[in-house]
Image (cartoon, rainbow, N blue to C red; front, side, top):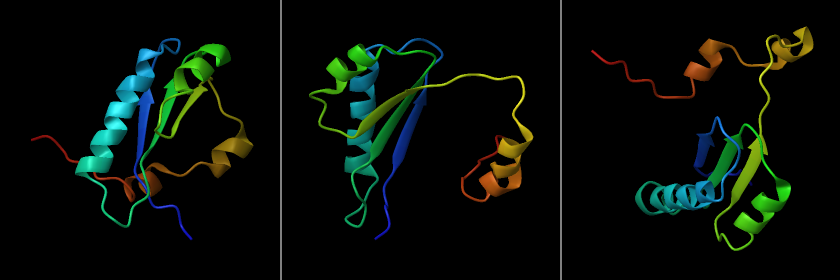
Length: 103
């Protein structure tokens, strides 16, 4: 069985705040009500933050009834050669997303 669902990703340049989860729950409800069809699984939310407290994330997500994950990100100046070989090319990514150009 394949996982077939929509994924909402929110990228924050600040530390995680509890209000981010309620906004994500809104996005997921909108996706599930307006976009997904009967063959899709419930949408999944990912919140990427500059920093987070595990305790605050746990308390925030405890009673959220939507699948939401929170993770930190780190910015590096250079990626290792091994990692660069594993990443998709710009062309590979563009094959899987819709890009509308502005006139």
